[in-house]
Length: 107
Image (cartoon, rainbow, N blue to C red; front, side):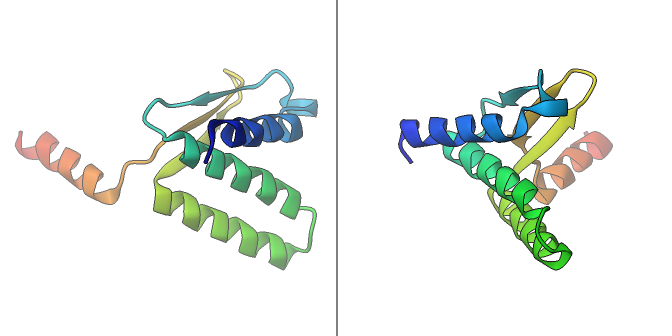
């Protein structure tokens, strides 16, 4: 993806979601998230919100597909209402968690 395309996706997401009760929130993308992955995550987030207005079966299917793609690329989205921030960050894989647990237990 070109930088301009990535910026266009991010801007479209902000224009669609950071309005109304979400006005005043800001987006933080962790440095270790590739810009293309951030664009994919935000695109899927926006499409999932739009799909929520469709039939429930359609929404559930779309939401699950979006979650599957985010899991595949290892990106997670979280919302902190106190700090009014939406964060995109790299999700730890199961292998990473196992290694961290082993280091914690056995040093």
